[in-house]
Image (tube, rainbow, N blue to C red; front, side):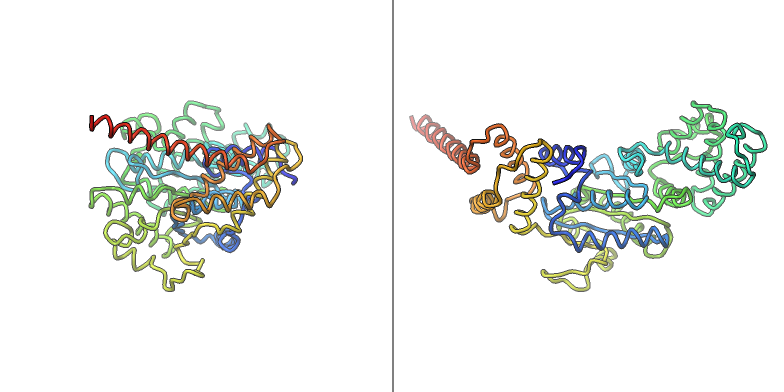
Length: 443
């Protein structure tokens, strides 16, 4: 197998740690071809037409929800999107007091990524590249060839007019006027190389100003981004990144089960209100160039007491018109994920074996048949049908590959037979301890 070492390193370290890799997903894609094709089509539609879409990846633990969101991320970066993500937690929500919603916004802005800056914190890069793009346009329009023109007063004023013209389209959106104003301030500080003022603008855009007094003192802006208006500024950001030459904005929101777990009914429904608002904005064309995904468990969606289906307006919009186990309409908002079949899991483990051998530079020393026997053993274990989690199987398999690499003469089957023996001995010890405890009580 030919694979970049950086990709193989990311794949193996991530999977061994129980998480989905951010790179090289194409090497471990198995059993999701139709879903991935649909996602690519949706991203291209947004890129070409400026539409927006919402997607819910629904499945039990271990069915690949995070994998699908990481695929959206990778495909989005390839298509020229700005991509970001955040996990819902008790401290990060769509709606909340005590800066819980602002904390979600902070995380999303921190994780902004582009193809040239895939590791996050891309906001200053996005702004700088946007300004340099406008400067290049003005240089071409005015037939400037010397870069010294960048400091020419006429050139600077012309670029500033271009910026005002570009950001004026944001005024029609709530929050657009202030957003446009801070962009103009950023340009002036960019030209003057005023790093402190640039830092203040970035603080404002990241939602780090907690009082209007501080924002007014530093930037002359009366508003700040907070719990009540952060979503409006995300919509402005969507439009801005399109104007800056990107395909759109992708937002991946994971662990939506944490919204389902909110015990206070009113607080939970306020969060569902936001989901409904986002859904309606997208379907009614009120937001431009946004692809937003939520990942959650079946309970998060279908529980009629606490899930999204408890909110009738959402149930009416999200409940599939046709529900069949064998197939589903992939164009609808809800995409249900089922576990990989044993056959698909076999292919996945074979791919991981090949990646492992390529990364460490040794001849493949585990056969397809040995992997098949390992999977048969895995699926025959008591309770496997209900409790087996693919991520755990992968972690164990990579650990076995590591041991086999260090001890080539070892029979691969011995690794999991020894594992079974250890588990059996551990269970016997527990039983023995309980028996001794009972005897102690009786005496």
